[in-house]
Length: 426
Image 1 (tube, rainbow, N blue to C red):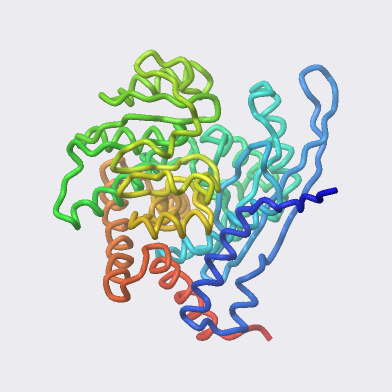
Image 2: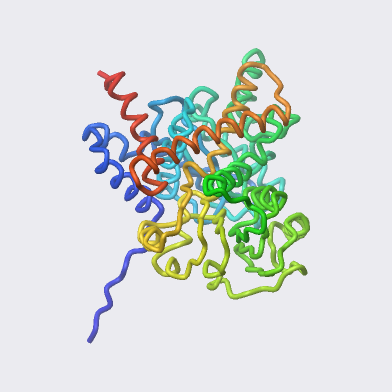
């Protein structure tokens, strides 16, 4: 009789802690600070009831993990997805700590969400679920404590519901001072012009700067995108405007391909009408999803969920560049294979940091009672992103290391410095 040993599937937390330990070893991180940064400050799990449209009550589970606030208030998205759990939230919160530190923002890292498939609920039900979750979180969020933002399957409307619910718990004189409890709100409700495109713009800009560093333009560069939500659409919009060619897109429902190019705007309109799916788009043919990462192209943009490129498919990759629009789309084993093939990875904490930089601008706008316009926002975003990109590029050149390691060195060293300067209470 043969016994098959069960192999534990690697989680996103395995990936992020592996990346952290690699960098901690490399920079000889202070062992006491290493202990602090290897765990989250707070892990909040909330079970809460909501009455559905049919009168039945359903119990939902929500999460908020606050990793570290050495540099400022916790900051990070809320996602609505069936796979949301505390382990994923821990990983995503840790990535947010590195991301905000790398960008030089006065924030720490947090993440959370609700274990739910939003497609199975009406708009009214989603509103009640969101408001009840916000009320249950209570003082665990706040404009100077923990500031949520949109993430997978959440949007400006979700943030408006959260802001309104949170502000309704305050006295009338205090409500206006709490508008910046979330970012990514609708423009008419305290949101920032350009916030919706900031993450995708950041992915685009880092790709552009990468090729400019090699004396090349984006014209006729081919790219493929996994995930065609807010990030996938906007990065495609900006890249195609610069002459690059979108040749394949994958989402949870279909994988489509057209070697002559896919119209990014037409696909976006189609996906909205199909409830956020590229399935059935007439400007491309469907292909086997297993072959997606093996498509010959210049750029791969994973902009969906984590752990998509692994040891099982990394060997098939033929691109020159992978730009991480999602958080943690490549696991540790997959990354080793990618780097051995000589392919460059622009890491998530740099590549998709335009979103949190845009969120910082919105937070400042609300906090200071100001109004920023689109052109001003995009100018500020480009300047900040370019500065962060160049700092990582300089570290890569100086130490002859990969881009993720360079970004991690900058981010973690910045937090280590803060702890060393301030000490640890008491």
